[in-house]
Length: 487
Image 1 (tube, one colour):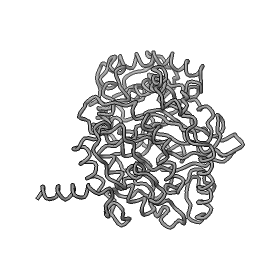
Image 2 (tube, one colour; image 1 turned 90 degrees about the vertical axis):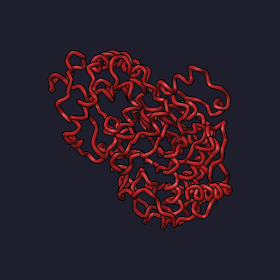
Image 3 (cartoon, one colour; image 1 turned 135 degrees about the vertical axis):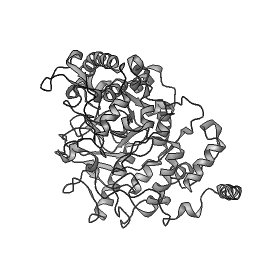
Image 4 (cartoon, helix red, strand yellow; image 1 turned 45 degrees about the vertical axis):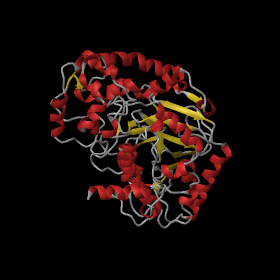
């Protein structure tokens, strides 16, 4: 029976698209999230306090604890003293800027090292300015046409739109410049196990929303945070492997490799089916600018010290100040904390948030730097573990607008998400990880498959099956699993 099923699937695979892949009537395997907005996952947008964690998290601390973590804590605090001063003195200039044309050539080792160290990069040029501005105008027109149905945050004066399926977003996600950039960014990753089922040469789409932030806005204020899980970093066995070197103790934290994809593909970042929580392996978050925006104009802020901040965040729950009223950052004024269930900045079903009280040694008040000015068509990307934020007020004169478009590699799990995302796209519904509801299903003029002009674009959207290609890590066995997940 199994052999018959396999032959049936292989016969289907001879055809680029199938009826099952093209119909909006197919059923997504993922349960739809509750209707809402981006505020659902950020306490900094709602003013909530982080919920106290259940007692089982005390047991989790003890399970993960190793005496050698004391030495790790000592070393990380010592290095932070120097690193935070460096970031504070250099500021925004620490963020690497690379011309898109240079991606066609080979970047220097120093350029690659700067991207990896900071976990952030700006790619300038590539998408013509006029094209990017055209996307913004098309989105504005789309929102006006469907004004009675458009939702977002804040609801009384939307800055972040619950729009995923506009024609402009479809065109941007399949733009050759963005695809080439994403392929370059994925190439900075590697696998520690050659049997890892991933193609780092094959970017796929991950639908996200968009922002058109108006001058003066002070409501869309995202404090410092890390996406891709909160308590999951410690609770999920797969995430424990991702950060295994840090949790090992001693000086092993220095061996942590944030660009090793092997442990990532089996990790679960969303154990609680939270709205707005990314459930796949998204190696780089990113956006494409639709405006000329600089510091103090409602732009992105980043903490440009990827490895060191990751080590500190993972170690922080195991230590507390000796005196709760003291603000001393000295190693000797902190002690081991295994008797509480506290994981600072962590809540179930929320993102991992940070501030100067929960993570004082990061000195976020002076180390979170605004990215330098970007122009329409420029792209900005940050590693999935990079601490980032949004400026708390837009003090500029023009809008601060972006399309959120990340770099995501093809894996079997990612392909299964791509299937459900495709089904929702065809039906005009929000992407599976995001707030549910009717979305754009009744909107006039939303994007369709006719807005995708290339075979690569259709594959990125899960509308065509993948083909064997050894040079891209697409072995016959891997491709068969991926294509089966897409059906």
